[in-house]
Length: 120
Image (cartoon, rainbow, N blue to C red; front, side):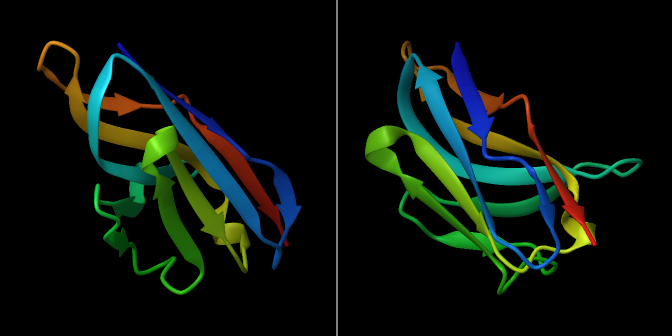
């Protein structure tokens, strides 16, 4: 089993910054792509940002220039620095990780989500 635990969600005012973290644990051999997704009330889950194992990021247009994704491979940890938050960023944020577990099988794991609420 591979577990992902997110943290850092909060109720904040528009314009402030927030950093989310996600720690992966379990019988992990490798973590390839990691990413953040979000789901706002009444909407489908959408991509926020992903990062490859070597650190190449990819962002949704809606967060480019405001959000920064990063990872610490030695700690199996993923981060999302969110600046200039707006009410449109209100959502449950989910961490995703893909890779290989002990035994050689692949995994595609999701965290339970952390709620970010931005008040205007």
